[in-house]
Image 1: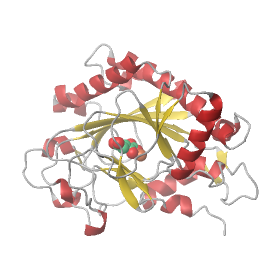
Image 2: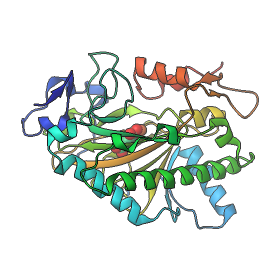
Image 3: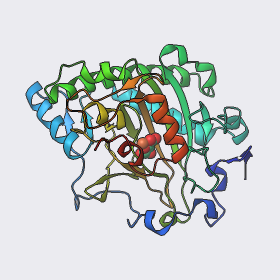
Image 4: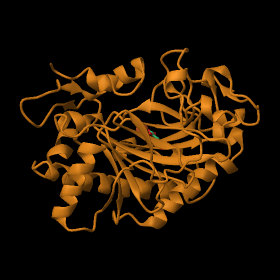
Length: 342
Ligand SMILES: O=C(O)CCC(=O)C(=O)O
Ligand SMILES: [Fe+2]
């Protein structure tokens, strides 16, 4: 078992046979799913939107997807699919091919939330939080003043270049999607992007090792993302679930698609017309799973408020919103609900 400070990497627990008690979820948050991670159409799943369709049709499909799901796949998105594959391949290789002491040379600071590097524990606030069955590597990528590739792995000569290319491509796609999403509400194209301001982008690679008792654990507990919009790719294992009408729905992996997740500030800006998506990751006993989530968020000092009247949410300074998230914990949508005006 490896530890840095109080941080243990989940990967180093694999092979212990039983899940340590800190990782055991209370009954009410455990998954009911018999863990075979495919949604075989017995339940509706988030829509797939072809961005090469004509403009009108894309706006309509986006409007429905955003109001009914807050999350959807996009295809023909303009990002080279080879780059998606490279990002998955290289990030998997960091977790699986590098020795633990090499990985730990990139350890994030366990005392500071969202610090860059290799970690396992998302929340630093309290010792009684149930831990996620997940390790991660967080890269700070935009604005360029935050980007320091010397903090990223270099076991492969391509790693840093691929992450930088991936960051630029995701940035362009996030901007394009926010324009389309604004237009789908009849707002000026730049409305949501302007309300978020310059993107603060982080790329988090999550690695979920096989879990001996998947029915007791979660890879990542239920939450909505805090910022503007998240663009996610995953491998073919499956395990991401979105909450819809009180039911958890498994998101099937589509290798060439990018999964778009609306986050809390987009809910505020659209005045609740579009809701952020509550999601989580479940575990399985057989295969490690990998996802790459790219977050596009406001800067810490940005004031965010609804673009529509009368406002249903109070304005908030993004940095204050983030601090309360880290002190209280994500727990579904509790934090965004606190911004609702009566
Ligand atoms: O692993 C996944 O599919 C979900 C990741 C996620 O929700 C996050 O990093 O915020
Ligand atoms: Fe998330």
